[in-house]
Image (cartoon, rainbow, N blue to C red; front, top):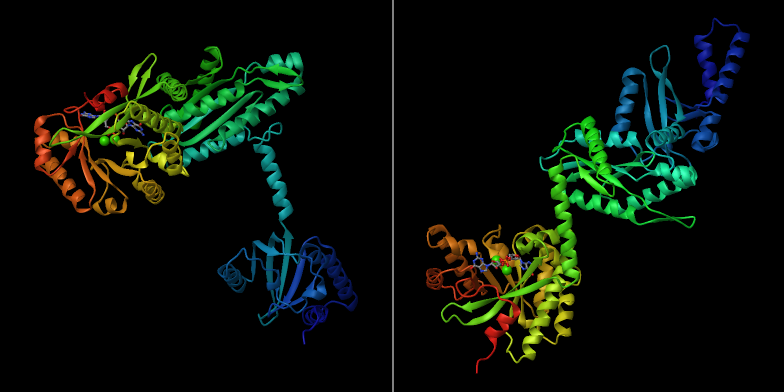
Length: 581
Ligand code: C2E
Ligand code: CA
Ligand code: CA
């Protein structure tokens, strides 16, 4: 039988307080009971075997358990799953060694909810030094924590917009600066000013401009998506922190999005308000490597943007700013070129080396910039990939190729297969094979007229998805060539995994193979490999008769290069294929 706590308490008093008078003892006991019952801390007392002997009212209030529900049980019923067994082991080890333990612990209420409490456990020993009771006193920390969180929120947030405030901005920059980062990862600290908010305050009142600021905050947050931290620094000034940037150009896109979203007029109470946003950027590590300078320099840059007439952004480092702006302009005109038929196609014939007979051609996209003149695809394809235009560009190339083929067929030309370059990004597009097929069908062409060239760089990192996509292309009846072979990291086993029809030997090997034995043996190995895995092999970049001969000696049957044909405009290519006589 478990002795009741009162009974045991009396025993203690009998032994330890024998000097007190009966009255004194009774007063003390009543006082102790009052304290026990009325204290706001939860208290429970267990015997040496951890069975609960008594709990107070606060215990019931906090845990939800009535005294009769827990008497005789162990405190295990209060445990949550937040701690592993080693936590409890070390807790009891401390109690055994030192007689007490205190700390934070997660427990579970009767209703199942977990809560954080501050718990102190004391072992009460008898005169022989044996533990007779454990007294546990605890208070609920969840409310305190909630209040702390509320205070933390108030300290770090702007009540008007719900965004972070200056203090949060500074904390986050400090935190990002303290993280060890690799050299080419940049931070951009951006300050943004909405425009002459004072004018709005004066003419339409503070309540109106408050709503404007709230709307501006929403727009900015949408423009940023998850690319950076947006805070309100004060009045109509916002701060943006962008971390882990690889390229300065990535900031220019974000700056432009932020600027553009604010340039759309605000419609409030039938007023149309135009903002003139200015943005200033300082970069870590390019401009500064500490918080103070980053903030000051972004301020400098902001002032410069305002001085430049607003509706613009400035980098602290003007050269970077110029580059970023040039890049943005280029992106903008590329977009226009894709949408407004500003691109054209060239066809570069591929020939049988022995006879020089054209058997196929490679489609190469061309862009003649209105002021900059011709720009190489080697330059603008990566831009299109970066700024999300590559799918549109690829679709345009496919559609235009189909159109040109249809026109040739209408002109009575027997069509030869074409090879179209693909970016790996396009291959990741869901339903890509069907998408291509829709053009083929629309122009009443046959899938076996098309081969798609993909370069090995980029393939490897996204191997699984890309191989699946390539397989779908093959299933649709298209051919697949591995372009620039030898320049990436392809291992032979990797090549076997790809559903290839052709390997293209990169032009750099063709160029070097006359003087460089290593290049020549790479070419020879690729040819042998291709023969062994039963794929065609084509050498690109042939510029001389000697190269043609050597390639043939090494076993290569097909080739492409300036020595035979340069990339031709569609008319010139049609003329070439036009049956004579
Ligand atoms: P690529 O697929 O390796 O294309 C071959 C490039 O070598 C072409 O440059 C072509 O004009 C050039 N070339 C051909 N014969 C010779 C030669 O004998 N000697 C030398 N030195 N060069 C030769 P281009 O047209 O400037 O294209 C550059 C790259 O841009 C292409 O390399 C391809 O990766 C990409 N590209 C071109 N058009 C498209 C396209 O429509 N879509 C995609 N995604 N990429 C394209
Ligand atoms: Ca190619
Ligand atoms: Ca190539």
